[in-house]
Length: 321
Image (cartoon, rainbow, N blue to C red):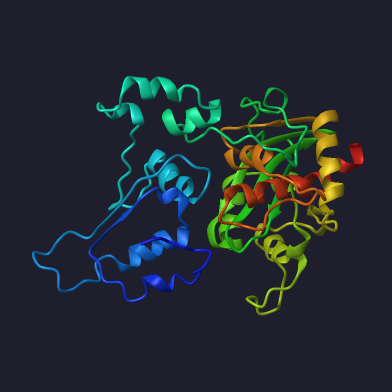
């Protein structure tokens, strides 16, 4: 059966389905919600004879989407759920593939060949209109930059329900070293503060900036306090350690960010900041200069870490441009 998500976003065709196993072909072309809907239905056929195992098998090609986030990355980090298994394989592992066919595949464009033949999950698509058009790996990636406890440290936050993201940036004058990133599932302020405390930043050298939307009151708190007030209380910060100007418009922010990348000394630890480096290379703009971020199921349209960088440029680096 086909997913047909465009015509059945509520996945009604799966309603009442009783199965003990499922096979998903090219799961990277399905929606994440469909994958979990199938997980929900397997094992629901109680009349099966012989107690067949409850199993879901799936094939996939490397893709920069939810499959990489919840399956491949967790396989690489050895954090897959206990009952899950990822079995890497390439087309060249098939002894029955004709050598002529493998030779013909070499005529594919380099990105397609790396992804579909060599099984490279990290190769990125060419981007037609990147937000950070001034980004350069040669200039901006420097894995030798690490956190220095004696330098001022900014935490630039983007408040999302899921996840809350932040960049850890050391700033001296017009230079900025992006040394780490924070990603908090389900947007917990307490978990964010735990992550900040774990960095052991001297209180006097810590500054918080980021999304101005975090200044709004939250009904979860008895006194309707904002996210920034909660952070200030928990981390015992003074008022002047919270720096939150109004959020910049995308068009203006794009000019400022790219000017900063061209003119200032900005370096990023790519090992610690994989999310930001991905955003720097993959997040795109439309013809009006607006960030394309309407589909959070597409990780190139989330732009969470890019937003953290935009807020930092707007609040701190803009004065040097």
